[in-house]
Image 1: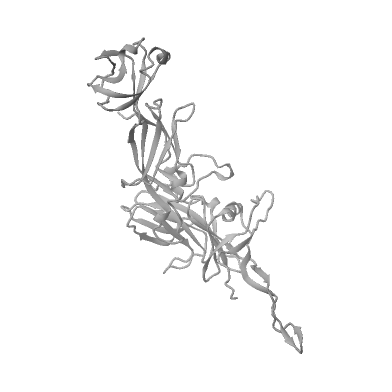
Image 2: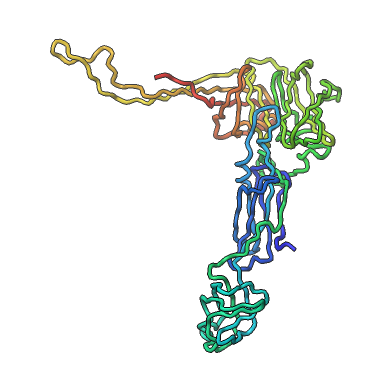
Length: 464
């Protein structure tokens, strides 16, 4: 029977940026030198990628380990419509323990050919072992030669004799603890194991309150209804995100290789706009499904719609509001949302482009020239020379008027670590130039629009 008991564990599928904490108990936790051992393996692989040894927690004696930092280093993002298993990782974890080998004898010391004999069943010591004895209270005074380091002179199954004279023993009833002199340990790595656990490149929270357990069953696409791994709210028209012509959303979904997935577009009255088409997968993992108004080889969508992603069991629905307003610009920002999908915003009003210039300069020696016996600067002399010039471009983008749901979504764009700018031709990596934000509420402000400044991730090269 395992000595380890699992007290708490995360869901089988977890966001990598949430706590992924395991808590265990062990029957040997009071042994000297005890440590809990947590060993993490790639799924179905015998080579560990990390091992943690932890002390029992004061008060409970439990072993606790959060492996979220490790998992974060094993997942990343992919801005593409395809299998995106770099955003997903499967692992196994084994729970073990270690402690210093020791016995606690409670039988009176005996005389064996003039030396001290200790009785203990199945003690494990053999002739020649170097051991250390620590006696109970009063042992040093009563039996000074028994305390400390000794050599095992002889051993049977249930007793062993040490190089200490029995004649020096004045109280044979004092108990003691025997350990190996080198403090060797009993180590068990895989007392209990869990397998086929999953993480993905996401961070789940309940808005600003950041509380609540991750409801993994709603996202593992084995139920009807299910959810994509996105912070979009599905299945309701009230939480429909805006989408303009040419705008895209990438919905990341947990997929299974044994299933075929069908995508269908409907209007808000449940009439089919774009018939079902299938998407097949070669591997288990994650897949980015694209949502767009311009499905290839189909009539462009120009009304409110919802998309259905259907597996053998799971049915995933997300609603979108078609934005047909006149535009000044057709700029788009795509951003990695908190759960690993890619959402977007259209910036349809005026766009302003600016540049910031930085220069490194030094004042160099000027040779000059001599004319008619007098030293003069030449007409091309340079004193202050530019060593390095850098230009960074920024764009100020302006949204059209938006509803409360899109206003709530906007703060995710401002805080996203990965953003791409699309100007109708190319995608360009960029960063959001903002250190704070205000989440506007319609009760405070009936008309809501937002402005954002982005800085392109690549500077313009300058020759010297």
